[in-house]
Amino acid sequence: MRVMKFGGTSVGDPDRIGTLCDIVAAQANTRPVVVVSAASRVTDMLLKAVQHAVATGQADDAALVARVTGLLAAFDLPRDLIAAELDGLHEALEHVAAARAATDADTDRVASYGERISVRTVAAVMRARGLEAEAVDAFDAGMLTDDHFGAAEPLPQSEPTLRATLEAYRARGVVPVVTGFIGKTLDGRVTTLGRGGSDYSAALVGAALDADEIEIWTDVPGVMSADPRVVPEAHTIDCLSFAEA
Ligand code: ASP
Ligand code: MG
Image (cartoon, rainbow, N blue to C red; front, side, top):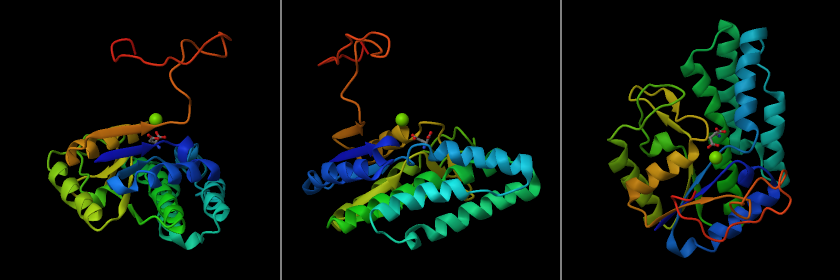
């Protein structure tokens, strides 16, 4: 089986989400597990909202809500799908605003909502296109971590639980769409694995499931010989060894 991970730009606009659904649908018979990031810019917006709440005492999530509900609206999907997450996010920001301070745990709690909203959006679009898919918060599937907020590491007991939980989705013929980036401590506090951590999540899920392949999908044609903004004749490289990379 394979794990297919899609990053922020791949879930960042309606066209890309459509492409993602086509790519996954083409593999549906192999029952993949999908891991996704927050839509592009959303994690940055969440972290800015934390800073703003500390600086001003205001929980301002208007721009964020507009960004994420805009994606749902583009597919005629109801905001209800993410209502609980939007409430949870607002509450987390209110908490920071009232304290005029954010612990690393507070920051992780807020930052987690990008992925929690993203999986619900992507799974709903898949279902609207006839693909059996369900959103999964990684911590509900067993992604347990230490309490190093902002750069948490998985606990060894995550592996068997992730495997059992995600295999159960596959056995039902459902594509689990799992949050990258986030986990929870043993005492139930949300953690993040560090910026860009969704690739790491995909690797952890792949290892837990003993996957044949972990695919990190991206939306550029490949690795280039140089930065094309600097070197106009730069070209994509057909094949690159790990050592060369
Ligand atoms: N959304 C997180 C970030 O922006 C994780 C990721 O995209 O891999 O860092
Ligand atoms: Mg990345």
